[in-house]
Image 1: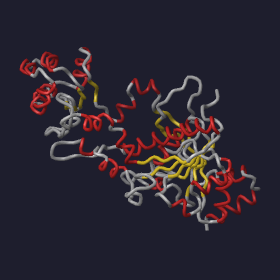
Image 2 (image 1 turned 45 degrees about the vertical axis):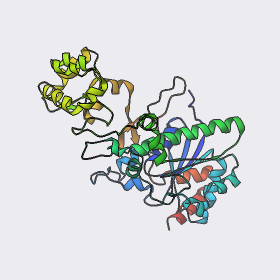
Image 3 (image 1 turned 90 degrees about the vertical axis):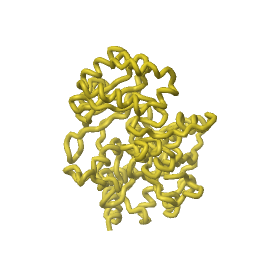
Image 4 (image 1 turned 180 degrees about the vertical axis):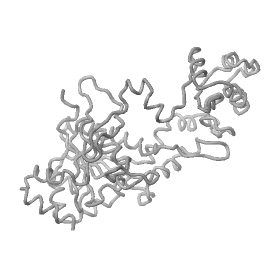
Length: 397
């Protein structure tokens, strides 16, 4: 079966997370991706280590997470030979993707207008911190900054201490919007033959994923205050018992929304049934949580999950990564697979959570070594083996 993006050519100048995660999804769908990297070190995230750890091949696991199904071409963007190669690739490309700070690639001759002269139908997608213009255009853009500026950080944590979301959710949201933006532009190009410039940014994406909360703030009169709870309930507008609770075996369970009358019967606390409205239970959420905590500490995680689910209560175990990897639904969904890496052997990957009945995604090409495909790509552009070797050697000087 052919893949949904077979034949689509993408020239990828992205690094770190938001850009590479977005283009990796397109690669999983079958797009042919050439990743442009620096000679020597490559994508900066190759050297970004977690707790000082890198793989045996020297690459960060974060790089491995977001760069499968791509070919690596190592170039020095400032050399005339690199410009010649990139312009030849741009002439064949359907999409160019970049996440340098606004204006950087344009100064080097790799902006939208430069590529449009070569290929009028090219789609040029930029990913930045705050957009391509405006008062913050030259500010550094990063996940934590976008979470903070978007209002997300002040929606999490306790009354005394707001916290950021642990995973880089601003990057991840932007990656998904980047992928969606490119798919839409490809559909437009298929119908009209026209390319266009597209941009997505971290701040806008992080605002967009808070649609419920921000809509409530915009449209309710008077506007809600969204105060965080004293005891760390899951979000400022969720009442008890919504949140995470420790069990007797020092594990945790998550409880969702439960009507107070039902909760009172489940844990044999009839006084809880006196909270008749959402407003009443919300006002007493910290006190209610303390009552629920006392009961949950009396039995194990498995007991409470089985017990609550038997009454159709929103409840789930709070899994470690090891428990998640062995969860029967995760195994069934094939969320985790293995792929062969040229230096590391078998490595674990996290699959793209999309399933097509007729055009399945592919996971057959491991994250590349720096410049692994340089010669192959140059030869595909018409360079002889000797010419390709000469270009490659000049890039590394």
